[in-house]
Structure formats: C-alpha cells, structure tokens
Amino acid sequence: EFPGLRYDKTYSRGGSITIGKNLNPTSAISFNGGLSINTQNKGEENESDLSSGSISYSKVMGKHFIIPYIYYSKSNERFTADLSTKGIGFNNSYNINKNNSINYSFSFSTTKYNTTVKNMDNEPANADNEIYTTSVGYNFSFSDVNLISSKISYTEKDALKDYNAYAGPSLNISYTRILPFGNLKLEKTFQSNSYEEKNTFIHSTISREDDIETSQAQLSGRLTQLLPFFKKINPESKIFYNLKYTEIDSDSSLLQNSSMRKNTSFSLVKRFSLYE
Image 1 (tube, rainbow, N blue to C red):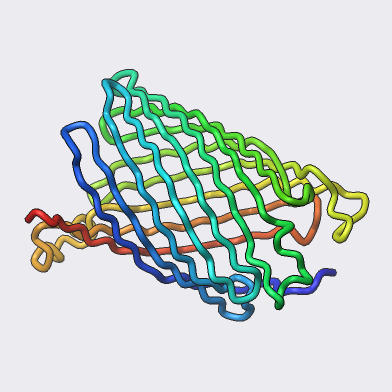
Image 2: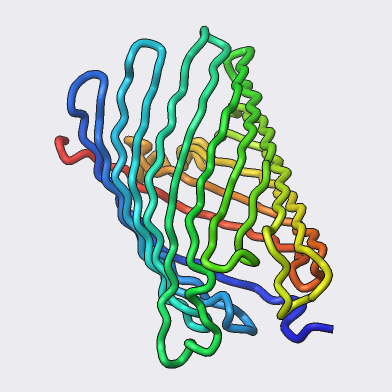
C-alpha cells in the first residue's frame, strides 16, 4: 500500500486579461495574461500559484483560418519543485463548405524544474522535458445549431530520464448544441501513454502504461441568456459565463498512478472595448 491521501479537494481561483487588436480586415493580434491560485483542503501537494502569458496572431486566407501562438507559464509550487514552461504552436482550420471543415495543429513546449537546496535530493531536473504534439480533426455542423467534432492526436514527451518519457495517441469526440440559454458541449477523450523505460525505484519488472478517459460537460454563453433579468444591470450583454464539469479516470499498470479526479469550475468574463 502506498502512502498518501485517498480523497481530497483542490480549489482554484484566479483571473486573466486579454487585449486584442484588429490589424486589418483579415488579421488580428491578441495578448493574454493570467494568475491562478490553487489550494487544497487536506494535503498540500497540489497547492501552487500559476502565472501565464501568451501572444497569438490570427489570419484569414481564403478558406483558411491560421493561428500561430507562443506562451509562457511559471508555477510556484508549495510542495514540489517550481517549474516554468515555454511553448509555440500553430493551428489551421480549413472550411470545405458551410457544414464541413477540417483542422490540424502542431505544438512544441519545453518544461524545466527548479532545483534548490531543499529539493535537490529528489532530483527534480530528471523530469525536465520537451513535448511534441500534432493533431488532425474533422467538424460537421447541421441544422445551424449542432456541431459534431472529432480529433486524433499524437503526443511524444522526451525527458531527461527515460522513465519520465512517454508517447501515445488520443481520440477526442465532442457534440455542441446551441440552446436558448447558452452553448452546451459534451466531450470525451481517450488517451493512451506508453513510457519508454521502467522506473526501478517504483517497480523493477512492470513497465508503466496509462489509459486515461476524460469526460467533460460545459455550458457557456452570455450571462443575460442564463439570467434574462440581468440585462437591466448589463444592457450591452458583455458579461459571459462558463460552467464546466470534468472527470478524469486514469487506469495505470502501476497502482499509485491510477486515480479518479473530478473538477467543477464556474467563471465570469467581462469584455470591453478600448475604442468605445
């Protein structure tokens, strides 16, 4: 039996700001910055402060909608080593016709852990990694209010120590429906990761294989759609809500890596224009 908490709750609160500018009728640029604070009810291994920032550029070229981006995040961990991540990516959507489109993407990120006198015995730098991800997807809409999407992805993670490195595919299927009070999205992801090397500190004969199923239900839209009386307070309807429930079921060949996680979040976003 492995030590640790069997059940706990983690709370997250934070905020972000996004500034965007249209460069011309077919392109725009946006800047985003945010801060998230995570606290835990009983333990402390998931407590952290996460600051992040990103820059993205969007361009419409005929039937193509292209978005290259870069991002950076830094996490101040309470229990484990601090880490920082830098990444770049590229997305493109191609509209075949009114109801059909395809999209593909590629991203690369590098993560480094901070070694200090306090944590050097755990050798956090062994988890330093580079992650490559590519995907291709297909979208089909019908009746003007329904969207079915599918996406196949492949991820490869290279780490300083091979027992922290893995590769594997994933399949994502989602259904979105426009409702009078917002957009409902139901989503399911199946992911499989095979690790390159056994971690003999954990088990000398069993190789780590993870099968992860992620289920998600999300409702989002203008707050006045959900609460019509709020239009008296916000007549321009520029406050948006997002309610999301996520369940992650991880089944691993190594028992201590198997888990069930559930997360519920609610957020409000106020949009405004600097030119009004």
